[in-house]
Amino acid sequence: MSRFWNRRVRALHPYVPGEQPRLANLLKLNTNESPYGPSPKVLEAIRDAASDDLRLYPDPTAADLRDTIATRFGTTADRVFVGNGSDEVLAHAFRALFHDGAPVLFSDVTYGFYPVYCGLFEQPFRHIPLNDDFTINIDAYTGDCGGIAVANPNANTGIALPLDQIEALLKRHPDRTVIIDEAYVDFGAQSAIELTHRHDNLLVVQTLSKSYALAGLRVGFAIGSPELIEGLIRVKDSFNSYPLSRPAQAGAIAAIQDADWLADITARLVASRDRLVPQLQNLGFQVLPSCANFILVHHPEHKAGAIAAALRERAILVRHLSTPRIQDWLRISIGTDDACTRLTDVLRDILSSRS
Ligand code: PMP
Image (cartoon, rainbow, N blue to C red):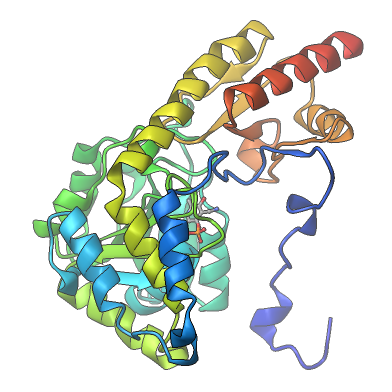
């Protein structure tokens, strides 16, 4: 604790360094990264962009990238915002579009950064408990609020919310921004982007970190009505007019244009997930129905923390989250089929030695 830190910073916690250790033969199934590489066209575009032009500032408006995203999703560039990872896009959205007179609403199991942003920007928030089956309880998102954030599929459960329920939420709160965070949408859920044309209070946020296998490039984007986008641009311009480097803009354009690569690596991941789930169920795990590149699992006879520690000793990292509602659950990112086999072999060993 430093006397130089202000009140807001004192309440913040550093990112757990254990999530990104550097060990040999480590199987990282803890941060939902893709086990596959990005499209070769992305690497080519980044190499081309890393030329003498690096001495020049990038396009602050990322016009070509926003055009590419608009074309891909059948919309126009004035409805597209880009940022340095969807974390930055979400931070700007919380800051620009949520009002602080009433609490921002999000569920008690969701992306961990939502309460952090609220704390940083001094916005009150209220956790809405999930239903008993871990689905989002849309009927409880009522009353005056500063805005609403929903991860869909939900972070850490992987369960998707149907579009008609999102539309009900948008209609119930026409004067408040509803953020739908679609970080994992490509793994089996339906995107709400089409609803942005009918609802000017909807901001859909996506990332290239998961399905496009580009967590290291740091590119995220939002699609919504021009007035929401204008709010985001005002905040962005007040902090950093050049959030995306030249290589990031070029690489992201190539990634979004290579739809075949995305479809291929996404289908492979979904197939691995569908093979892994029954194998874990055979080992006695309860597995929530996931539309994401991770699964949330619980073993009725073994503590989640003990399983995570035993896996770590065998160089496999999974995520044991501190969220109270899921504290006896583990989040496991889906790897290649070989990685899934290594995981199930080691788990079988651990469970039999502990029982
Ligand atoms: N939203 C959700 C639900 C996430 O799980 C993550 C990644 N952990 C993000 C947003 C941020 O991803 P990125 O900043 O890499 O785009």
